[in-house]
Image 1 (spheres, protein in one colour):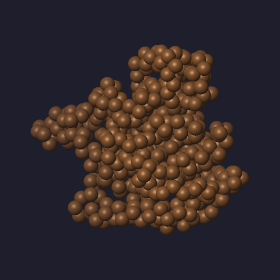
Image 2 (cartoon, rainbow, N blue to C red):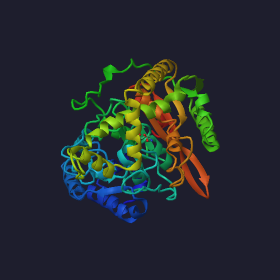
Image 3 (spheres, rainbow, N blue to C red):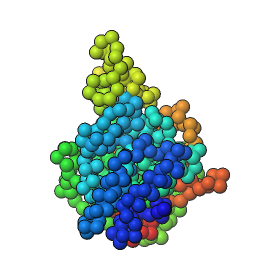
Image 4 (tube, rainbow, N blue to C red):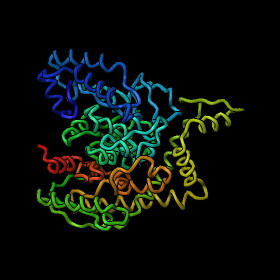
Length: 474
Ligand code: GLN
């Protein structure tokens, strides 16, 4: 059987083209690995029954000489992207039996590029969380150490790739949900610039923050998927073309480090040590690494947890027991609504709807939501300025390595603090990538660590260039 651990998307494509193996054999290897490993890991919520048949169709096309960037490659999807005719639940009971009526734009683009959607992966309910423990269908485990979390909310996608069940997956990132699980599972995770990838058919969390992106093993694979996914889409008016980004300036290999932010308390000594090594590695690669000041950066977490929750309370109002999914009968319409939402939403989702509604309520709107928007603007302006001086901003991806399952689930605030380094890219709309940067050894297990590069709006090219150099890819 093909060992998926030794394959990347690009090497699989080469092998498929050279007929070293068929798309069917590749799909069978994926499905078999899922059968062998997923009862322990629980990365998948469903493997699609049509996947093998679609692999045969891909084989036919390969024989006819068709060449597409993802032809015959199985891709796993986080369970919040619509695939026509298949179930999609956002990890929630409220959508347990909901079948998608259309393809999301991301899925349509994958299909057009020849990819085969193998199934849907586990996630924190409605993408709210950093550990995949908030799924209504049970947690996913970290394949490197199954006593630990894989990160979240795209933990199923990360675990699926890291355990060799698939060679590529998509996640969504509202405040770090692609990058943080990538860091915890030793993968590359890319969050594109806000507006780069269409959100049409992505179940919304925070609409001004959400982006779809790849979870893969190499920067080259991230690039392949990113190239397929990006582009303006009439179905999502927030997608914009290249002409709308700041004028491109030359890549001068200058990296800025927001020093006080990186050294703040709560960042573990191992992460700090790994960060120093990372800085050195970049210097050895010919980069200039300099300290930068981002005065309002420390407020990004608060801004994020106001804006994201406000937007989610509004987005989730549509789950009313009438339009989609679960319906619980009450005494009247209003009672139906309460009963349906009470039964369908998990604890964290309810907490966030309540908090989000609170910050939007008339008495508190100015104090919280409006203030958060103003600070968001300050942070964004600071980033604009800093990117006149540097090409990239470097931070760790996470303040700690993967924690033990259950360790933070009783303290939401502790869990929120884990997002400190990832949320700035979403609040500012900037693209960011997490790269594997080393390990922390605990009880003879090497837990992966990640570093994060952030670039100016529309400058994914800089992330990919630096990422490839850092990982020694061509
Ligand atoms: N952990 C963050 C949250 O819970 C980010 C989640 C995400 O990016 N979807 O909101």
